[in-house]
Image (cartoon, rainbow, N blue to C red; front, side, top):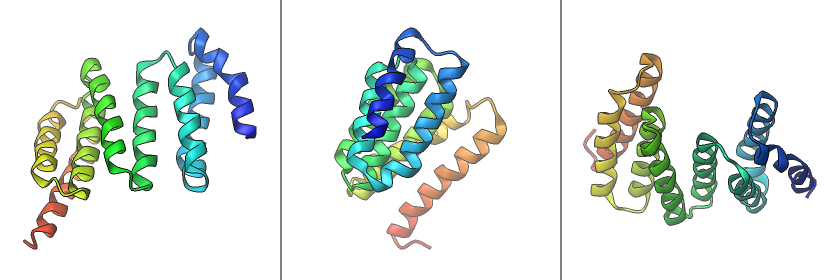
Length: 163
């Protein structure tokens, strides 16, 4: 509850716009929600994430908050809802032409579709992830993302017992 009260003080800074100070505060809150609160109190984590999303003006922050919510829902095994929020985040990443986020989200979606048994749909996202991965400007980031894509592809192979 202390966090919600603090957020009520923090939110006006999001409404004005983000400078370096508010970006730093956002990152600290994001980290706290992602690491601590999402495990100890997922309902409150979602509530705070929704509040931050509603008041954020920055599209990257909105995208990150949507994916945070999707990850919290995934931990709760609410795969359908997690997929929904990841697809909304993907629309933002597509509009921004942010290949790094697109690659990450494709991997997340593939994993979620695999978890619910929609293997063909999940494999489509692996293909999309591989295609967009070649467009990531930073080669180190591209290699990391490609490793995650290949890991996801391996999960499908293991599921087919082709080892």
